[in-house]
Image (cartoon, rainbow, N blue to C red; front, top):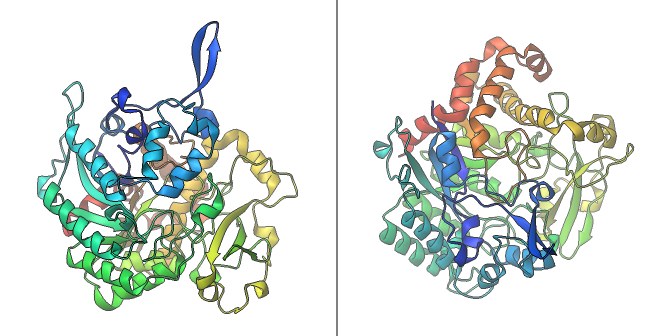
Length: 518
């Protein structure tokens, strides 16, 4: 059976390579560090382990073809300026010490061309290199599922996604930014004649239309503070325009309040459209308990509230949750299922709840997840407390993951990461069951949305797209034979058709969803 991935970036990293390298979306990127001359020769060393597989190719077109992914959500994305600022602030990057990461390409993001020009550059590369170098494999975007050939092993069929409305702007803060958005979206659709299935309204960096959730932790935090309040009037106009074009707004990356507003707008004005979140993790708590797992009192910093969530243990042993608001709350999972929508489950270990592995945790230290809440949204996020300083800290520390448990997990992360992934899947089932949604129906609304090549730190049991077939086989084996994990999750194995669950998760659910929507 083929595989599907709802959110994957096959052409992002090649755009950041030196033009002289001639990289294409089919080329494998292998990041190496130049360490100078050794025995008279310029020497480079592999640095993949230092960067947790984030710099090497995770999902170029060759990897998709090798994995048997012949249908995927192909993401177009213009890297935001503050990401370029943050990467260039590190001398190892700004001085060109990392092979295949071109400083001049990053610097050009800070000047001209505009975000929209970068978006077109991304699209042009995919179209120009639609056939592999050996001529044996091909790629094309499809506008309808009538164009999809399920039995094809040589063609990768892409549905077009765009990550961030900034991609259709020159400067999101310009006075004419909204009008520029409409003009560039028109230009894109006319120029490429490619249907856009979904657009993220926000991404990592602040835009004046929709507030975002804090979500990047390997660059200076202050560059990515969320500063807005939900969705603005202009943002609502943009959303209505997207719906009029049958383009779905993607819930991922929106702040807690912005997601709440979008879901309410959907219920009142666009109930015939499905809700979706193409690459998600689950917070493991209901919306009303979103600030119930705080490690310490919120701290005021430069116009935002800094908060740290402890990591409540998951349903399975050796698992926990990331309670940050970038992840979906229980009520949002239910809303997406009931809308007939689809959730893509991320393969980013931090999003799935695994603690940061760059810290030497001590036995008495509680691992935490850091995020920032904008001053404007504080009253909504910390409700019913009007003053964030009044929010209580965790009242059940015994339920939190501890530093010594993390130390026990570190040497066996390949095994542990299976538990973190399955914990998310079981949480989805538990939420659906608690909402009295039949599980045979609920399991039709979840798929894989890896975010491979989105500069993520992937789970160690599935580092890139080529490992997805083996990952699927192992997930099926564990669900089929693992009586203990079902008992831990509190769900009777007889309630779920395991074969249907796995087939749906890795392929069938997305195909059925797209057949209805495309």
